[in-house]
Picture (cartoon, helix red, strand yellow):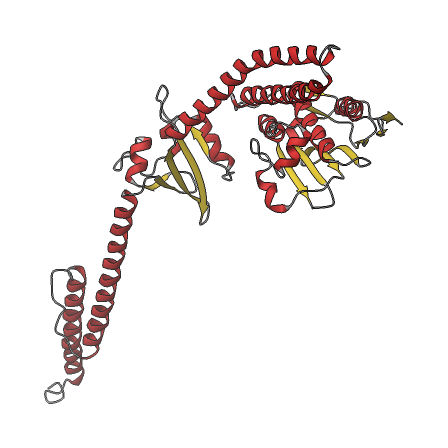
Length: 424
């Protein structure tokens, strides 16, 4: 038309304007549909615009499918988590609440609409719980009472995942805590009540064993009864000591202890009790002391040394070694006894656990020594490591953190050796 009227450029301009107007209308329809695609049908467009609408429609249907699938999975997760007997709280890297199930809300008093995004420690306001999160060591659970004056005990167990996030399991352990309290009270009270009658019985048996008028055929039974009464007295003493240690979980502050003098004293007592059966060696590789309670540490070290003496055959050697490094202070009790098989090692610190019950009865032990050692180390922030191999002896090592090492020079006399009970 522009050519026929003698103005081809005006005709070309008009044609382009018509095409652009059509494209603008289709683009506007596509935009309007994208904004309201949940309520409007896709526009009827052909050519390239039809292909675009078709691709967008397929992507939208795929998105809707995956969205419905995720919503279904999330609803199923919420329904399943609501039936869990334990609470679950998901925390981000700042220990703020991302999600929690119904049980966690009941146990901790959380509100779903207002507590999301708030730091859990600030809601509970328990210093011990805050330190548990900040420390980042979730190898063991934390048990405490979230509300002062409430009899409910809650146990927290953290499980890190992702990049700094944390899943926190919350359990109501009130029943277990009550049973443990009842057990501890029963053991402490029973041990206390049995101590006096046993003292009387032991006294009469000692008198009878020293009486020349007792018939000869009664002497062996009397001596055996006296030995068993002494064993029962030792068990009760250990039970009372263990009950005293379990009464509090607070860390001991203590004072600097001269480990050289302590181990030398233990070696002398060990040599005196065992005569010439064993060689006792003390290796002092550091002049540093230990910041601890002297009575508790002496009890723990003596239990380890006495235990080594009971299970080391005649002619064997017991070594007491002390050293310090960047990881803290360490004391090892090394024996040349029969050793312990690997399946028994995880349970050695349990009360009354015996590797060989028959042999243990012959040695006269209470079966509580290693349990006492474990509790003493826990009160000092330490831990007990046991390595052993059948036929090659055992090594019991007490590890203390660096904060427990008293960096001061006690008398360092090198190796002190007590071979066959005689100081060399």
